Length: 317
Ligand code: 9Z3
View (tube, rainbow, N blue to C red):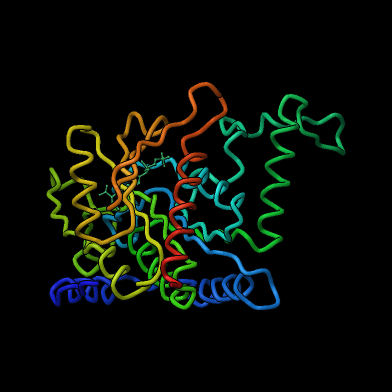
């Protein structure tokens, strides 16, 4: 595997050195280690572990943040993929943007969620008949996954939090080797305001139009692949709005970052189809048009799990 250049390494170190430290780092590390131990120890059932990232990262414009730039992502892809990985027997670390779509909740009405409930009298509350099956399934599936140690949910908001947490995860999973996977569906900012050059207090509007210079976020995929977790199976995503450049960009990313596959999707058709780009060719994955409840992630995760199985077998020979 090619190692990353000294320049990229310097950019990455200075990004982390200048980032505001994670507030609950010890707690996150303890949860991660406990989760990994539970799923890899000899006494327990050994499971493959996947880290699913989901939702968009924010870029604060002020240290005491009032305003921020956001990356679009509802979190649907990450949540649906998590459900499918759990069903396929994986233990999932779900690294998600606060407030975005959660696993097992996709069939619940979110607008407004309170419509699910009714008060037959002053002392009791019950789920409305029309939503009772969906709520029951959501509660049961989510509780089972958490209680059986198959789902760990960790929230982030900013690009600073996301990248620090991703690094913690990769480092914690290093010894799991080929049985670990990174499935990077989060929409990650390409540009940011470095913490040291950011104003502390709210930007004032009195001084007229605002000019902001954004620095480039160093590409962490290369360091994830070469240093943090080199044996992990790694799937990244490429999002474009112009379908003409999508496959070319995904192919470039595959070659540049040496990930095992890039899932290419176009914004307006992302729920209908994706293209899995890898060294063995491009595969179009669609949701089943004959089944209204079918989602693209059902077929996508089946394919990814299959590829991961082959990768594990090849790593052991
Ligand atoms: C994706 O491409 C995801 O599939 C979506 C899912 C964000 C489109 P939703 O959350 O949508 O279901 O609403 N994620 C990766 C987006 C991204 O930022 N990719 C970077 C790029 O395209 C590479 S890391 O350059």
